[in-house]
Picture 1 (cartoon, rainbow, N blue to C red):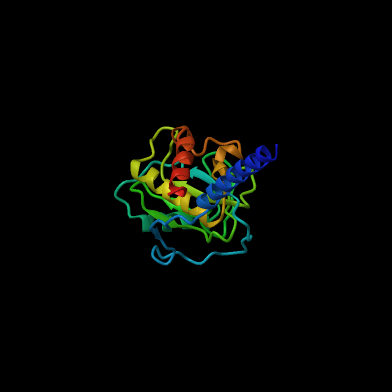
Picture 2 (picture 1 turned 90 degrees about the vertical axis):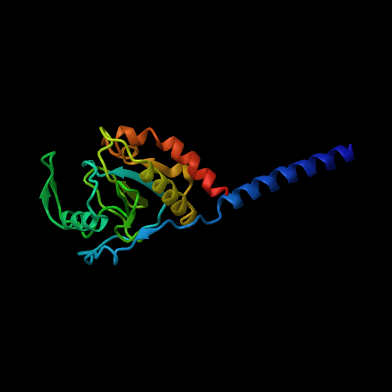
Length: 208
């Protein structure tokens, strides 16, 4: 009986040791992808106050505007910042207030280049009814209700999501789409359906 007890104890210890080793292995940092800095795309300073937050989720968006080949990412980011920091009327008829800065933390262009948006230490902004505090916001260029994300965009999304997940200890289960939190089509059906595969590939990257 005593021998059986110690055998079971050894098995339980082995199981928990293996589980802990797996968690520890998954928690190691992933490589930081190449990211165009705010300085490199000549960002203006943020205007107004922004709210500090703790990153707990990774939330995927689309720009909901057509992909534009041939325009430099620097110009795209400057245009986005100008729009963000100005009051405007949206296509829905809703008024958008002037935001302090670009609403997203990272922008992935059609060619897969990644640019730094709002300082990730601060919560983003939104036109929809959810609180973006705690969300690391990634936006992909395109309208994925009728366009497809490019292969390079998806590669960059995987690398960026894996790095953010590791850096801020965000569970892979918390990689979701904008429409998981608000009544919106964002990030578009053609991107949303790829999120389960994204999570699997991010898990694989984290285990390397």
